[in-house]
Length: 155
Image (tube, rainbow, N blue to C red):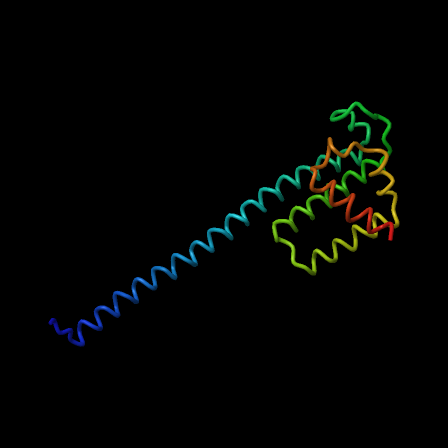
């Protein structure tokens, strides 16, 4: 039988320590890469949202420009254009919540603000009558407005 001395035990321990360290480094680097991926996607979404905000801001300032993107109604008032801007902001907030970028506290604040806008403002009426949702907003946001905001505002 082969006897193992104390030096060999230290050598085995050292090798196991190095291997364990490599696994820990691999685990945390993978975790960091996942977080970086989410951060990058969020930055891309935020950049796109900024562009959309610039476009809608122009339409708020000059509602006659809406005809560039739709010929359906060219006599939209500035409040309809402004409600588009608000709705696009709400949609962005919802998408950031879906990506777990917003904390629970931030989401609660935004949800209250959205609910108040649908309760007290014209935005609910504009959502129901003046816009063609399937053309401008994604299905997830449409469902959120119809099931959460409009339902909540009826209570």
